[in-house]
Amino acid sequence: MEIPALPEGIEDSRLQRLAAYWDSCRAGRAMPARADIDPLDMGYILGNLALVEVRHGGPRLRFRFRLFGVNLVEDVGFDPTGQDLEQYPRREMGEILRISYTEVAETGRPFRRRRHRLVMDGRLFENESLLLPLSDDGRRVDMLLVAVILREWQPGT
Image (cartoon, rainbow, N blue to C red):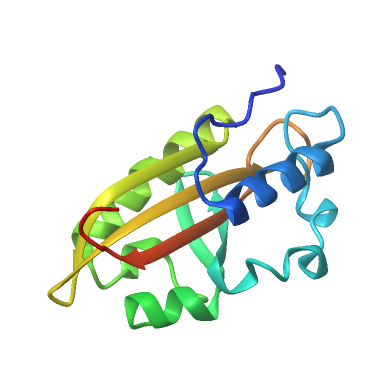
Protein backbone atom coordinates (compact mmCIF):
# COMPACT_ATOMS: atom_id res chain seq x y z
CA MET A 1 0.00 0.00 0.00
CA GLU A 2 1.33 3.44 -0.91
CA ILE A 3 2.14 5.91 1.85
CA PRO A 4 -0.25 8.85 1.41
CA ALA A 5 0.98 12.40 1.84
CA LEU A 6 -0.39 14.70 4.50
CA PRO A 7 -2.92 17.25 3.26
CA GLU A 8 -1.49 20.60 2.21
CA GLY A 9 -2.56 24.00 3.47
CA ILE A 10 -3.38 23.13 7.09
CA GLU A 11 -3.80 26.53 8.72
CA ASP A 12 -4.48 25.92 12.42
CA SER A 13 -1.29 25.23 14.42
CA ARG A 14 -3.04 22.53 16.51
CA LEU A 15 -4.07 20.68 13.36
CA GLN A 16 -0.53 21.01 11.98
CA ARG A 17 0.80 19.51 15.21
CA LEU A 18 -1.76 16.68 15.12
CA ALA A 19 -0.89 15.89 11.48
CA ALA A 20 2.81 15.70 12.37
CA TYR A 21 2.03 13.47 15.36
CA TRP A 22 -0.12 11.11 13.24
CA ASP A 23 2.64 11.02 10.62
CA SER A 24 5.25 10.07 13.24
CA CYS A 25 2.97 7.34 14.67
CA ARG A 26 2.63 5.60 11.32
CA ALA A 27 6.40 5.01 11.28
CA GLY A 28 6.70 4.50 7.52
CA ARG A 29 3.37 2.68 7.17
CA ALA A 30 0.35 3.97 5.26
CA MET A 31 -1.41 4.77 8.57
CA PRO A 32 -0.99 4.08 12.27
CA ALA A 33 -3.12 1.70 14.31
CA ARG A 34 -5.39 2.96 17.08
CA ALA A 35 -2.94 1.44 19.59
CA ASP A 36 -0.16 3.69 18.22
CA ILE A 37 -2.06 6.83 19.21
CA ASP A 38 -1.74 7.98 22.83
CA PRO A 39 -4.35 10.49 24.06
CA LEU A 40 -1.79 11.84 26.55
CA ASP A 41 0.23 13.09 23.58
CA MET A 42 -2.76 15.09 22.30
CA GLY A 43 -3.78 17.16 25.32
CA TYR A 44 -3.49 20.36 23.27
CA ILE A 45 -6.40 19.26 21.04
CA LEU A 46 -8.20 16.48 22.94
CA GLY A 47 -11.44 18.46 23.41
CA ASN A 48 -11.63 18.99 19.65
CA LEU A 49 -11.22 15.33 18.71
CA ALA A 50 -13.68 12.66 17.70
CA LEU A 51 -12.81 9.00 17.34
CA VAL A 52 -15.06 7.35 14.79
CA GLU A 53 -15.32 3.58 14.28
CA VAL A 54 -15.63 2.43 10.67
CA ARG A 55 -17.96 -0.56 10.25
CA HIS A 56 -17.49 -2.61 7.11
CA GLY A 57 -20.09 -4.93 5.64
CA GLY A 58 -23.49 -4.25 4.21
CA PRO A 59 -24.29 -2.05 1.24
CA ARG A 60 -22.22 0.89 2.54
CA LEU A 61 -19.80 1.79 5.29
CA ARG A 62 -21.27 2.74 8.65
CA PHE A 63 -19.75 5.01 11.26
CA ARG A 64 -20.08 5.08 15.05
CA PHE A 65 -18.83 7.83 17.36
CA ARG A 66 -16.59 6.28 20.04
CA LEU A 67 -15.42 9.62 21.44
CA PHE A 68 -16.67 13.15 20.92
CA GLY A 69 -14.55 15.83 22.60
CA VAL A 70 -15.99 18.24 25.13
CA ASN A 71 -15.33 21.28 22.91
CA LEU A 72 -17.16 19.60 20.02
CA VAL A 73 -20.12 18.80 22.30
CA GLU A 74 -20.21 22.45 23.35
CA ASP A 75 -19.95 23.65 19.74
CA VAL A 76 -22.71 21.47 18.29
CA GLY A 77 -24.95 21.27 21.37
CA PHE A 78 -25.20 17.47 21.72
CA ASP A 79 -23.01 14.45 22.40
CA PRO A 80 -23.21 11.64 19.83
CA THR A 81 -20.73 9.39 21.70
CA GLY A 82 -21.88 5.79 21.32
CA GLN A 83 -24.26 6.62 18.46
CA ASP A 84 -24.15 5.80 14.78
CA LEU A 85 -23.77 8.63 12.30
CA GLU A 86 -27.29 7.84 11.03
CA GLN A 87 -28.56 9.10 14.41
CA TYR A 88 -26.83 12.49 14.04
CA PRO A 89 -29.60 15.04 14.70
CA ARG A 90 -28.53 17.54 12.04
CA ARG A 91 -29.27 15.52 8.89
CA GLU A 92 -27.57 17.84 6.40
CA MET A 93 -24.37 17.95 8.45
CA GLY A 94 -24.57 14.18 8.99
CA GLU A 95 -24.62 13.65 5.23
CA ILE A 96 -21.57 15.90 4.76
CA LEU A 97 -19.76 13.92 7.47
CA ARG A 98 -20.75 10.61 5.88
CA ILE A 99 -19.31 11.66 2.51
CA SER A 100 -16.02 12.84 4.06
CA TYR A 101 -15.71 9.81 6.35
CA THR A 102 -16.40 7.44 3.46
CA GLU A 103 -13.74 9.07 1.31
CA VAL A 104 -11.07 8.66 4.00
CA ALA A 105 -12.19 5.12 4.90
CA GLU A 106 -12.12 3.98 1.27
CA THR A 107 -8.87 5.67 0.22
CA GLY A 108 -6.84 5.55 3.45
CA ARG A 109 -5.74 9.12 2.74
CA PRO A 110 -5.87 11.94 5.30
CA PHE A 111 -8.31 14.70 4.44
CA ARG A 112 -8.41 18.40 5.33
CA ARG A 113 -11.46 20.57 4.94
CA ARG A 114 -11.67 24.31 5.30
CA ARG A 115 -15.16 25.74 5.31
CA HIS A 116 -15.33 29.47 5.72
CA ARG A 117 -19.02 29.83 6.43
CA LEU A 118 -21.13 27.51 8.49
CA VAL A 119 -24.39 28.60 10.11
CA MET A 120 -25.36 27.00 13.42
CA ASP A 121 -28.03 28.29 15.77
CA GLY A 122 -28.28 31.50 13.76
CA ARG A 123 -24.58 32.31 14.15
CA LEU A 124 -21.89 32.23 11.48
CA PHE A 125 -18.81 30.08 12.07
CA GLU A 126 -15.69 29.09 10.20
CA ASN A 127 -14.04 25.75 10.69
CA GLU A 128 -11.09 23.67 9.68
CA SER A 129 -11.09 19.92 10.10
CA LEU A 130 -8.64 17.09 9.67
CA LEU A 131 -9.61 13.44 9.17
CA LEU A 132 -6.86 10.90 9.79
CA PRO A 133 -7.29 7.16 9.08
CA LEU A 134 -6.27 4.44 11.54
CA SER A 135 -5.86 0.75 10.71
CA ASP A 136 -5.07 -2.27 12.86
CA ASP A 137 -3.95 -4.35 9.87
CA GLY A 138 -2.29 -1.55 7.87
CA ARG A 139 -4.68 -1.96 4.93
CA ARG A 140 -8.31 -1.49 5.94
CA VAL A 141 -9.32 1.70 7.73
CA ASP A 142 -11.18 0.76 10.92
CA MET A 143 -11.10 4.08 12.82
CA LEU A 144 -10.96 7.77 11.98
CA LEU A 145 -9.26 10.35 14.15
CA VAL A 146 -11.18 13.56 13.45
CA ALA A 147 -10.16 17.02 14.67
CA VAL A 148 -12.38 20.07 14.24
CA ILE A 149 -11.49 23.67 15.06
CA LEU A 150 -14.59 25.85 15.06
CA ARG A 151 -14.53 29.61 15.58
CA GLU A 152 -17.21 32.22 15.38
CA TRP A 153 -16.65 34.03 12.10
CA GLN A 154 -15.17 37.50 12.36
CA PRO A 155 -15.59 39.73 9.27
CA GLY A 156 -12.27 40.67 7.73
CA THR A 157 -10.41 37.56 8.92
